[in-house]
Every structure is written in structure tokens, then in C-alpha cells.
Length: 76
Image (tube, rainbow, N blue to C red):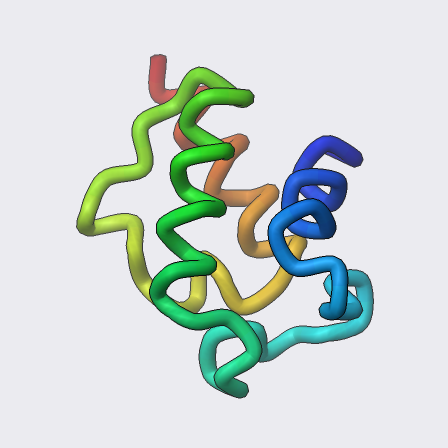
């Protein structure tokens, strides 16, 4: 899942994704960042992140994003 971190760093190289645990709640990422992240995750991991998955807790940390991706990959 290093690919998750790589994608995030390409979109926002200024953010310390390994240590930040409040990416959404802390206002680190905005809606445009999330749109970019979701698009990349959908393409790279062959998943479909739906509107109901766009909850702050799914995007507050790298770990939460990895869990979401794993969950969606296992649904297929």
C-alpha cells in the first residue's frame, strides 16, 4: 500500500501524510484534494468510492484510506 502514500504525496507534496491524523478534520485537505485523491484511488486500485464513502473518517489519515481501499477491494 505504499502506492497510497505515493498518490497522496503527488497530489499534496507539502503534507506529512505519515504523521497527520486529522487531514479532513484539521482542514489539511480540501474538497478539491479529495476529488483528486478519489479519482486516483478509483483508477489505480480499480475500485469505486461512492458518495456514502466520502465521510471524513475515511480520509483523516493514510491508515483510514488504506482501510477503505482494502474494504472496497474485498467487496468485489
